[in-house]
View 1 (cartoon, rainbow, N blue to C red):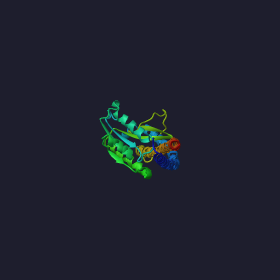
View 2: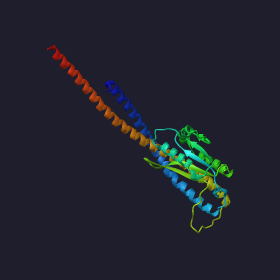
View 3: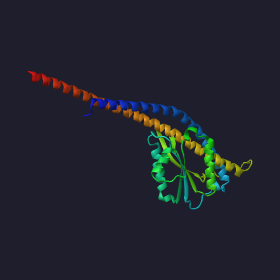
View 4: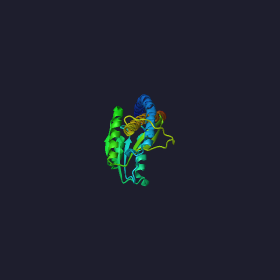
Length: 284
């Protein structure tokens, strides 16, 4: 049986851990409110830009960014993970999902390139000896829409230069503070949705192709930026939930250790009493 000193040290250690997890939960909850507000504000704008793009694309179906290539064999993935851990299955679920996606034989990709955002994704693929086309860390705290547009421009340029055939965006979609959904969305070439048969024609200034080019660039930049916001809110929600569970587990562990401490003290007191009684009996 563990000594009283050992049990007391373990209780103190668990209490210190509990203080840390409780503080991390409070910090994540405070940051989550702002991140959730940014996501809610970004979604309607992103949806409206997508609607405009789909309408103009239906009238200009021959644009190269709308054309499906025959027998696509090269794919690129932009994968959003976190820089820090202690956020439950936030990173693990996404990385296992993309690993399964890459290994699917029915995709028929002979070349796959990965662009990873976040230290956790970098370490995951590094441990599996996968080469990364690019890797960036420390972006979440300072990421702006201009950076998303620059990323979109780079991918558009690569697609037009035929460096790849498909581009996928991989991120965690924020559903609630305790629920995130891994999403793998193909964003290049742009998917055209079926619209109504009647499409009114408008006058365009300067011209329809230029507007379509601008809308595609704006739409892809908006998709990337919104994915960053979704991923950031999902990470904070997952961390808040994980730290709350850890705090509750610490409370349960302290309770069990306290029972063990009381039993050990009782056993020690009983042993001392028995020694005293035996000594008194020996003196008779």
